[in-house]
Image 1 (cartoon, rainbow, N blue to C red):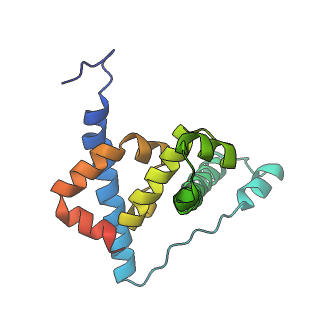
Image 2: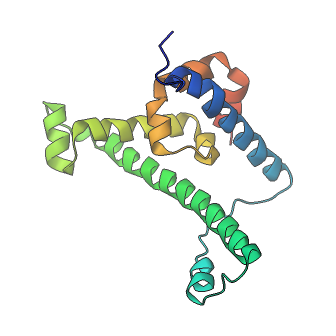
Length: 168
């Protein structure tokens, strides 16, 4: 087991303590909403800017209410970002049949990004193609690519969760 540095849990511990429970919670919430015919709302509402700009943060209650609105908008934007990132990775996957050797150099020349970056986007696209439910997990591109192998291993062992993530 990896040593903890200054009391900070290692990546494996973080994965099991935070990442997996978040996926399970979010997919359960999504399925419950689907059962009640509630659609996801991924439209961003920037009305909080008017509230702030118009000097309406005059009470603690108004500040807290605006804070809650901003937090909700951050979640929506993060979900939208993950969707856009997925499609970027999908484009890199679609380019594969056209790639010339050396593949790393070809991708870098054609798309102007390092092959390491392109590979991360491709991994995410493959992951989302297999488990589209991860789009509602609330996890970021960075979290999903950091825990990519750990996540695949976990989903091979936890077929119930894997099935839920596949059938969303």
